[in-house]
Length: 162
Image: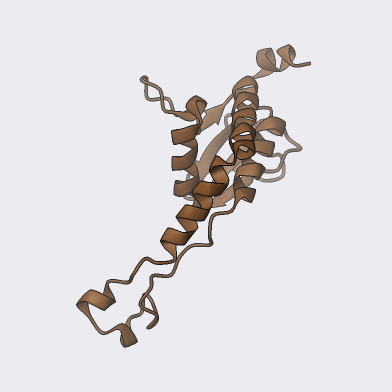
């Protein structure tokens, strides 16, 4: 499974983030990007943003990248996941373990890189707003048109930026 951000503007291609990376990506952004914190009414800004919000989010992510904080976080996270031991070392025979294949360490998702954050920032700035879905979703997404069955009406917001 993966998670897909769909642009409101047709020429911008969807941004897909693999499951294992998505939750680290999401947790970091929610922690350090105030605009992305879930609101009291239950609305989750990471799931849907109009054009103006997407621009603010993209700019905030670029500021975080420029600060160097994200680089330090990524290095720390990647170092930590390389040392996660497999439970077979505690409960069974490491040589026959089908999860770690005898290494004693859990297989990890691809390491997190700053590129996914840069891609999301660029996507936000170019998207005209976006909405989100996971690949297990029942949304009717038309890959050719780049639109879901119920696209947002952002024409009033678009007029502010033209």
